[in-house]
Image (cartoon, rainbow, N blue to C red; front, side, top):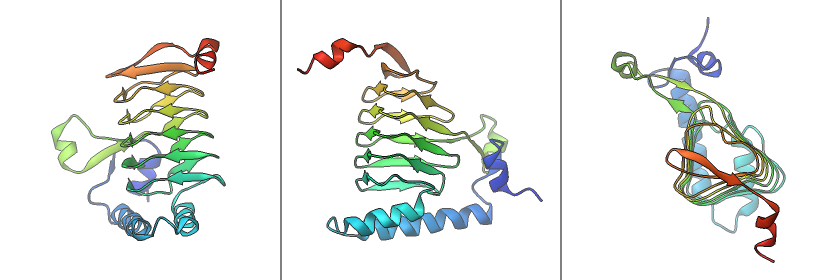
Length: 194
């Protein structure tokens, strides 16, 4: 028998609101995050160990500044030298992958979940989840919102307050609502801070 979790993993509509298995998994994640939030800042090793158990994959070097919230945890993969500042949210009904050397500013959101426009299905608790992929060496400014199914290419910078609704290529500066490419990142950008 196909479960609601299997439907979610296939990118199809699934029951996120009333399915007992998914509710239990979200509750377990919330409990783990509650424990994580209670750890003191000096308990860095314990904090990292708890996230390493919760997330699907972590690099050796990473920092997530509380508060932080996610739905399941196991759908989150972070690379080496990952930094996420305070107040971020990842709704990980589908996989959310971050490459190496990714810097996430405060209050960013990564939302794999979407809901049908059709009110009848939406009221039945149905939703879909599409993966989000953030390439290596990406910097996301404060309050960036990344929507379901979006990929951001390696080395790109997303300006503060952007709502990323479509894929962003590699090595560009992009910003706005909706987020759009402003220009390529060039050698002149390297020389700017000499």
